[in-house]
Length: 305
Ligand code: B12
Image 1: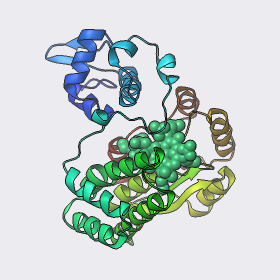
Image 2 (image 1 turned 120 degrees about the horizontal axis):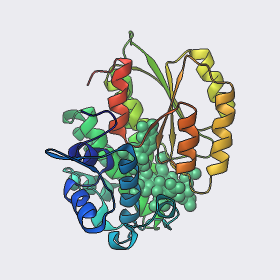
Image 3 (image 1 turned 30 degrees about the vertical axis):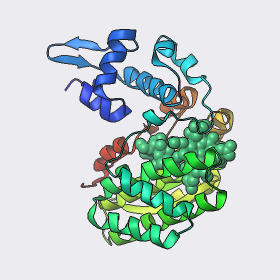
Image 4 (image 1 turned 135 degrees about the vertical axis):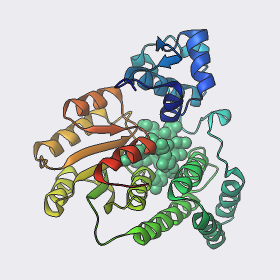
């Protein structure tokens, strides 16, 4: 395959936009302009970035016809309001029924029963299926309900604790004495969205890698100190809340990189504003928008899935 160019199927997987929609957005609105080659189209990294921005806007209720011609900068500054995700935009999971069942149990504070249902799913799904088909959509549902006031803080906390326990237990189950490489997971100060790093850590552990999980909301200097003391191969940071924290995050990463051991790689996953993305790319950071991209990259450390 041409380096840095992706066929439509890969683009669909990496951006979450269906192949049909990619074609329609291109044909009807000229939203992206891929290279035409014999047998199809090839999309660049820039096309991928644009499709992600378009998807984010459409997912939050904007009509593709009205936004397709906007610049990336304007797409980024479109209002993304709390909890206004268009229902039809949410990815349908093949586990929809089970997810709804767990959600209802949480609403009724039947946490033990919810845990039981989740554990049953975990017993027959692969780690990847559990994360992508259950954990990501379930947390989306729980968080969205919390954002619009349909779930209390207590219910959200109960759901978060349940998922944290389940993934933590599974991570311990996968722990091996001899691992090719160890990866450390954390989020920056003020970032409480935990499931990106928890899911990545669990995927890495299931692939046979060593995992050192620090958790959320950590100051830069403390993370660097932990990296120095433990000699991990990579530090994986999850970033989600970005919009009003661009400068804070740039300073955070600047501080971190001042003193960062050169033998350790820095990996940042989640949602990154263009400016922060460019800043990090200029510092040789690896950036992943999806768990699948991270999983693919982790093979480089010896992970086997
Ligand atoms: C659950 C949730 C919460 C929970 C978090 C619980 C917890 N313990 O983690 C709670 C209720 C606490 C919460 C709080 C807030 N949230 Co919230 N939350 C969500 C929600 C619904 C789901 C996020 C989630 O965990 N999904 C599961 C993860 C695995 O999937 P994901 O986030 O989609 O991530 C994908 C990629 O980005 C990537 N990824 C993400 N992280 C990482 C990390 C790595 C290493 C890698 C490789 C990949 C990766 O992989 C995932 C799948 O491919 C989203 C909206 C939505 N439907 O997505 C809002 C959302 C993320 N929250 C948002 C906001 C604004 C907040 C608050 C600031 C709201 C407020 N006013 O108080 C607070 C404060 C949070 C803080 N200070 O950190 C915004 C963020 C906007 C932005 N980008 O700036 C969102 C998008 C909602 C919105 N539409 O506005 N939230």
